[in-house]
Length: 314
Image (tube, rainbow, N blue to C red; front, side):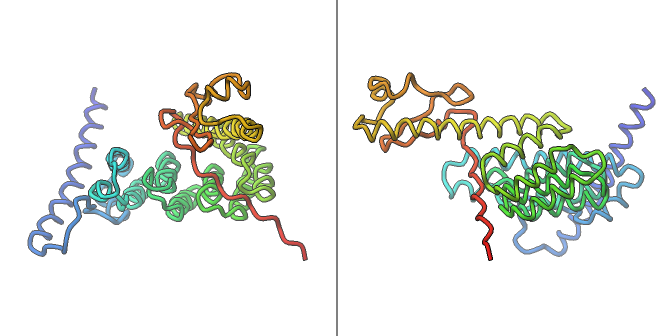
């Protein structure tokens, strides 16, 4: 009980110190109002300052900032998901996720070994807008900061390669980071294979599958593992849609109307209404294009990286 009370007092102390700093800043702004303040702001932007204010409780302060980061990211994402028009999206406070990197920077400055903040944070930053900040450059910057604190953390090297591959589509940089990660003691065997495949095939779906399998196998937390499983199911759905589309195209070439599944079933072009890996029926448009249903938990399918160009021969 005494230990719990000591921890509670520590949390209260950290909150009061940070709140006190915010109060001082608030008095300053009352006397010298800043131009056009935003609804979301950070009173402390320096990691060094935050560590001094946290005294001996930097790790607890990091937890507080991490909670705020999750609330900030989740709150904006939910509002953007609910927005039906661009005008509504622009009215969401902080819709560009402008505070996301500063919050992650503060969190990891307070606790440089905050593994979840680096790996989750990189995903939040790299994910295309509106699902994330659409800033793969900041995702790499955050992970490199983690590597500076833990140079032997091959998972961060793998994640940097992942960002370069999936969101920057820089396959050479991705392969270099996978290769670098593979040379760290204790790194899994598949990283060397992943480096070679990425360099040779680039945006091929096979290399994407290998990458998500690597993320799943190295995941230290359930959320990352579940996200990797979902991405692999999306790849399965994309493969299956291609197969069904080929059947539809053959039926069209044979003169069969392709505006509904029932027409194709009657023509015995397909056996039944095709479903994706989540068991949600696929959609067939009036244009004869097979698509994932918006009702599917796998919707929307991610935009696939462009196929790497073959190396030119001299």
